[in-house]
Image 1 (cartoon, rainbow, N blue to C red):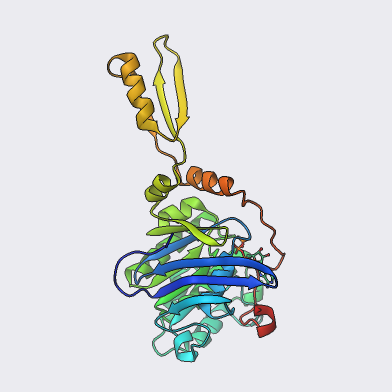
Image 2 (cartoon, helix red, strand yellow):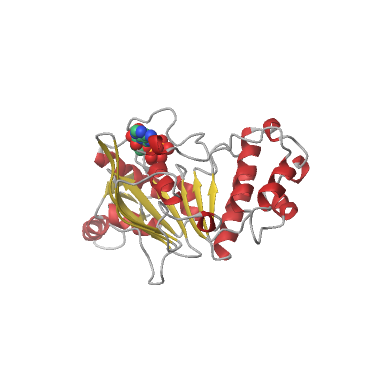
Length: 312
Ligand SMILES: Nc1ncnc2c1ncn2[C@@H]1O[C@H](COP(=O)(O)OP(=O)(O)OP(=O)(O)O)[C@@H](O)[C@H]1O
């Protein structure tokens, strides 16, 4: 299964991406594409390899095998000019604790040839009131907003977001969704990971589910449901007046049988297609891949750079 779409050259592309930590294979051949202006949400259970995939695409981790291209370059070999064109939202930057929010954003903006206006960006992420606060005094969610601002201040053409809304309150989450939509409208390619299926459905043009080291299915929420064939729910009212519900992977067969039994219209007939959550749970449950082991550090609080030792 390839998480691909369209024919124009993708801004992010992976083919046969493999990753082995020690003697453990985590990625067995991941194929995915993200095009300009497209949002791809990468889903998968804990330990599936989402952060590993993103870090390889960001150039922070060396893959074991496969072809990877981001903005036409191999992230393992690309230089500073390339890095300036990609946006990375860290789980949380550890440095600059004494810097003030505005100061840090303006400073980082100074590294880019055509940065966004820091004041405008602060407004966009809802930090204008906290512009003069030291970053170490920000709450977790406020820090996430700053991380996001830092990640996109350089007008990147691709943005990587690893669990961007973890810890955000509903208002900040909504503002973040609007921001991602806006980035896509500006033709930025966005690859994000999330455990929030509603968020994936709302934000993403396509969803890819990483399972057993490969993209198991990809597509829109509806396409995923069709591929996974999770059960639909058929409900109707029986001749004795009782409400009946049956779950089935073949709703049309059941409806056909009911029509014959009733010799005509079936009272209160309703067919509810599986939600993304049901499709996801059906797929992940079937693979037995839930709750894979995850070390405490995996994907959380990573530093801005990964040493070669760590990345092997
Ligand atoms: N540096 C490392 N050394 C060895 N194994 C690692 C390393 N980093 C991650 N792993 C293992 O690789 C697998 C994938 O981890 P990864 O963090 O990529 O998963 P994830 O899908 O992002 O998980 P989560 O949803 O929990 O963030 C896990 O089993 C993890 O234990």
